[in-house]
Image (tube, rainbow, N blue to C red; front, side, top):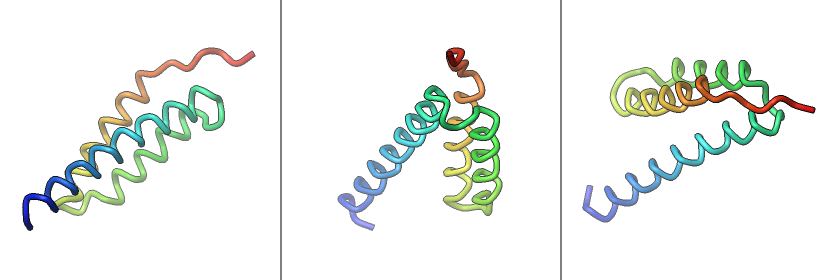
Length: 78
């Protein structure tokens, strides 16, 4: 793979990772998705892509999102 393609893949992965974090945090913060359900979705995604190779890195990145989401405390709903 040439450098331009590799840079594009890396940038795409980083953008997807950032958007995943923001999306889950926003959904939980707004009360659209319960935190427990968001955590379960992430756990299922991690397990489904843990097949070795590039999937392991993707699973590791989703595990980071899950860890950060688990630490997040949404404000109480009124």
